[in-house]
Length: 150
Length: 120
Image (cartoon, rainbow over all chains, first blue to last red; front, side, top):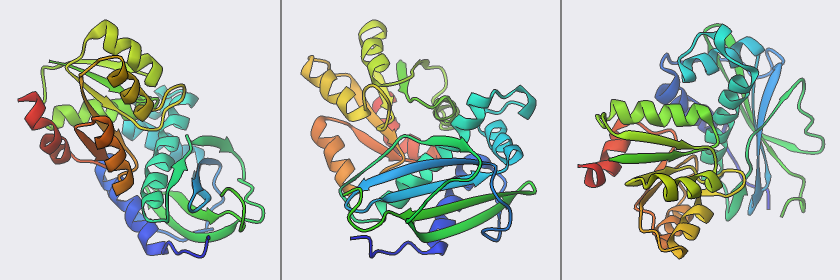
């Protein structure tokens, strides 16, 4: 069921489109795994294909996204604003990834957490990284183990 | 005209507001709802001319909101602004009576194409 492909380049294109639409200055391609994200937003896809999409960033990077999207200075953002902004990135990327995968399936609301995201037994399907204002953003798609979430 | 923007994300409500302005739809009254349930109440209390709704929301999803509005007799103009634009979701939205589905990420041009026939 999960023997489907999402190319790293597709993921980079989806993220690039979103950046261009909402965040203005274009990001540069970066290297996945270069920096460990401090904050992660995760959305789950369950159905014809099941797995998770994770968007990770440094605290500063997440704050810069919040500042750009809400158009307020970083030091005026609440932690709720920052989580909302990174969660919305995961929602948009997750929705676009979902549209390329076998359906029908449903997309969860985003969950934002600090520290490493555990994806035990999940299989890395695609990953991409972007650099924006000197901060690294990691995007990854993980497939659930066979028979789970279906 | 009055437009109700329903999205659980404050960030996305602001992006929608900004995009309406960039698309040239200035001067309309904007009202916000934080989920589908809040939007249902505000369609009653605010009587908007158009609802722009997210699909995935807590308490009541956008499609549940639309179905509930229609079954309660409301004929308010309704369109989705959502991260998912698959053919299945577009069909589901149209079958329930949505006028359009704008997929994120969107541009001011996308808004103009969808909203010009309604707001002009």
